[in-house]
Image 1: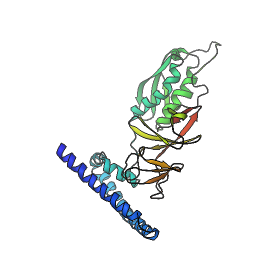
Image 2: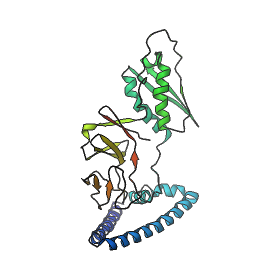
Image 3: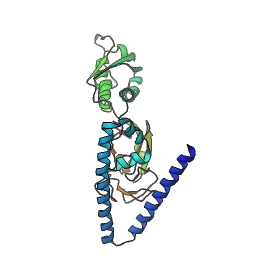
Image 4: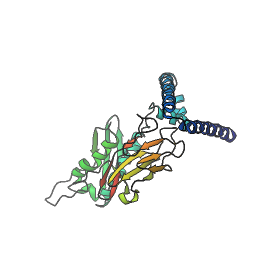
Length: 286
């Protein structure tokens, strides 16, 4: 099995080297010749995309497990993503709920509390339990609405009802304080500080197996998936000049301000919503 894997990798490397060699040759041609090659490339890619679309439709009807197994191959996954025929996989519901709860735990723990998942009642209901001081706080209803419930619904749009199994606490006139009374960050993950992202450069990050890059120009920060649209190679080792990122592997170029591929116009890097809270950079992972 190891020998077979090695042979496949060597074959892939040879094919990639051949593509790179022809790309370098074309880059030396005049503009008109390059345009003709680009149009030929687009026509072939459109033909391949149509064939792949028909193949996927057939596999979905007749052999869905085979299709799922096929996209585990990095090359197959990259090719289907390049043609926009495959969306990023959605994690299982329970995992997304736990991810949502992780985003609110820092706020709860700052008030010496926490939250636990009690039950998932399909198709659209989740039961949770506040623990610690949050379990008997007069602000528990506010905490549920503006913190826990908002986070779960952000990560899991199919969930319509988030129910607390805690007993209702009677308000006694004490000052109500909730860790989420003014928070607008539920459902967002703080991944870095602004000063950690090189101005005019990129910062590679990984969360829950998802590889991202954060890019910054002065005070503006953008987030993209760390995956070149050409064979899904990593982008974080690329060179940046005048706001243009050049992939180290095959020279594909991207405008960091918009994510558009300059080598193949009309194709964009996968983006992730980004916002700042003071010096923290938060990314919405959905």
